[in-house]
Length: 393
Ligand SMILES: C[S@@+](CC[C@H](N)C(=O)[O-])C[C@H]1O[C@@H](n2cnc3c(N)ncnc32)[C@H](O)[C@@H]1O
Image 1 (cartoon, rainbow, N blue to C red):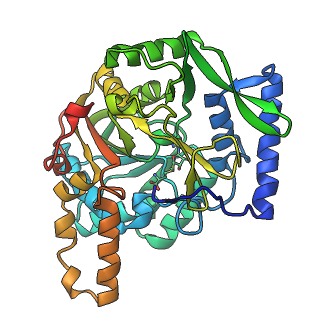
Image 2 (cartoon, rainbow, N blue to C red; image 1 turned 120 degrees about the horizontal axis):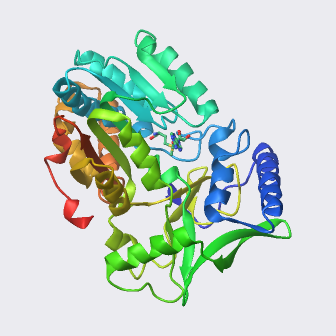
């Protein structure tokens, strides 16, 4: 996501204020039912996905200029075009097949990938979308029907993962939207739960459940040392199971997972002692997930070592891990820019700006990574040929 970081949040308009009031009341109800507190993962699940109330489950525009943040596909069609080139190679190597996109947001990536694959005469049999937000699925359908009506019949929305999928699985900024647990290291591992204080939410420490304790023990075993007293961070207890299910649906092909994140050693580095939560409201980034429930996005950077280990555990093969800039350069960005000189100066300038944001280290180029996972026989996308960061996992 591309956002500004600011200590002062923009004013909350009256509709958003009313909405967050309703969402917060819903969460207060769940906290009361649970006896006074819920885990942070439960809080995040409600704040993002409570039907009709959560950030992704309610009506406001989320992605793009008019929303709260901009993702790579929202920023530039170049992202989808390069991914389409990678998909073409994989589809060819498995003898046809389909693309399955998880969490398709506004539908932008689907549109750009389909457009490019049509141009390359390499369309997939079907473009499948699995989206948890019914509201976003409607937006995706409308955008696809408007922008690529001739390709819309190939697109199918699924209510659950398919079986026997052959081809490609794509997920851009989906893992960071999966709920995480928050913990603090004391003599023992303590869970940070969410409770109510007056009209606001606040964190409270409690004994960690067994699965959180084991997850932190596994992290410390990998690091070779105990985290320092007072160290706060997050861990996803759901990502491994989620990925195992996703990969089990793939008979032959490649999964490409894009997100901001890093390997475990950097994720749990001594100086990262306040964790990796990031919230987005009207293009401003901050780190307080307990405000603006239902109207701000809540994300956690991804521990790619955890994701890679889950992939291997599921019997899949890692075929690459690199940063977004390297993936795009290795994947054909240059070919996509071949016609740049023939464009009008304003269009050239705009495309150059997009390339900079997608690839510069201080922008999206280095923070974002792509993990490639293979099942069965399938060609490894060229995007991984340029630079390999597997040693950081
Ligand atoms: C940050 S948005 C990214 C949207 C889009 N991929 C993009 O890059 O613009 C996260 C998306 O993942 C969806 N999502 C969250 N959890 C999901 C899950 N378990 N399965 C499928 N989609 C999910 C959300 O509803 C939303 O569409």
